[in-house]
Image 1 (cartoon, rainbow, N blue to C red):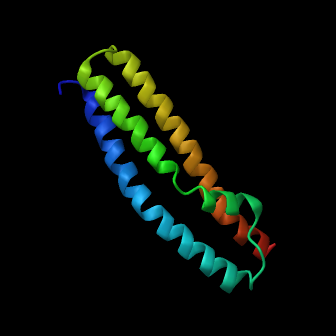
Image 2: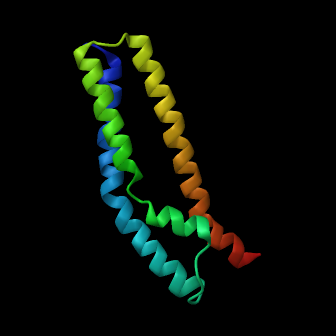
Length: 113
């Protein structure tokens, strides 16, 4: 494991596993708390419902990171190609996290406006 991208992919895979194990519990607790307490039984906004229903997306990140680790270990791709793949993956994952953050805050915007 001489390549630095191997370690980056392994680190991201571990972080995504950690995130994927706790996200369903957090979203379930969030839904019960916000819907029952703050919204007083009203329905959640559509984007928030979709993000809560699709809480398995970190496992896709785990699969991509494990694939990147295997490709890096096998040495099939050059290091600059793996670095570009890593950068694209990070941009996509940060975008999904941003959308999730916005979706979790929409009920509070509707509540206080």
